[in-house]
Image (cartoon, rainbow, N blue to C red; front, side, top):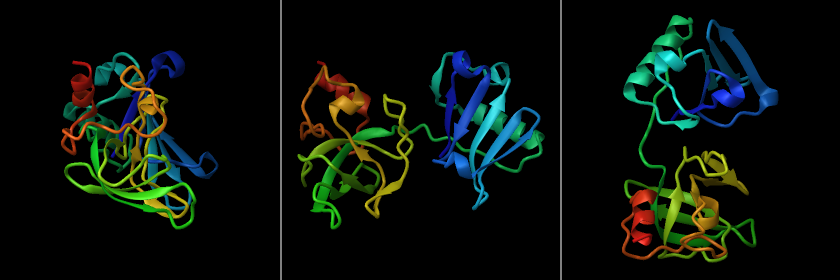
Length: 209
């Protein structure tokens, strides 16, 4: 899944696209016209694309993360192809912060403070490694799924913690910038009435009634 960011004040008219983390020391850069592709040097997988001078073509406004429309994705793919690259992008605007139900929770075999959970997020169950002391089976929580962008700017990608796969992050109100609702250490323990997969904005609205 490709994520898009636009910050004209800091970078000028450049749309930044990324599909995963990349070590800058292992990046291979190739530019053609207004398109720059950044590949992993070893695998040759395209990890990022920079598009220059595209604000007018793509009707870009404001700054920060851009939720690309189908029309914008089509135009971006046309620009990439016109530059002579065969890479294509896809966009996924489904909610990335959702309610999860912790179906299983066991101690991490190589850590004295991490737990390995199986967390139902509505349409799937994700294995997520969590370091919060209050994580437990049976809790309703907020999950940042892969592709989520935290208020800090950190992007949540699939990864590993102590050699165990982790497909997301279980969040606290502090990490979500929601301390006006609750300001306690550890993950946010939700009311049990929320269904797995419920978007975060609906949860916030319910707590603010």
